[in-house]
Length: 137
Image (tube, rainbow, N blue to C red):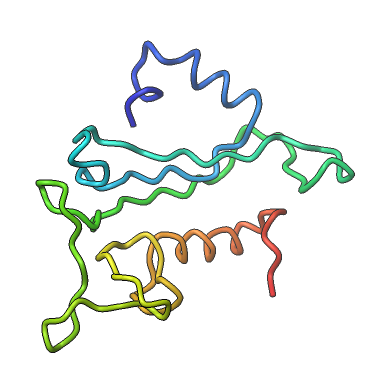
């Protein structure tokens, strides 16, 4: 996760940790932003520290907590940056419930039309961690 993992980026890590809890780091597939760039990218999810219930979901400051980590293995694009569309058994592009082409990825289950992905794994993790912003139903 370039930008905060290098030893020279300690100030960035300190800036973030003083203000927020790191909830998740999701490493995106290398083809995610092709053809514009092949730069490997990660997404950092944070929640602002908060001890005041009237200010929003609680996130009491602590030094020791779990972080959700995930790696996307299906970026939805090939090495040239062209989308990889899912196909039906007859070789035709698969359409979602709204008639849109479905891209092959592992980020979420697309309203249960794909296998569970990173988003669903995060939801389960958030529930187990009893994160204040997640309302268990």
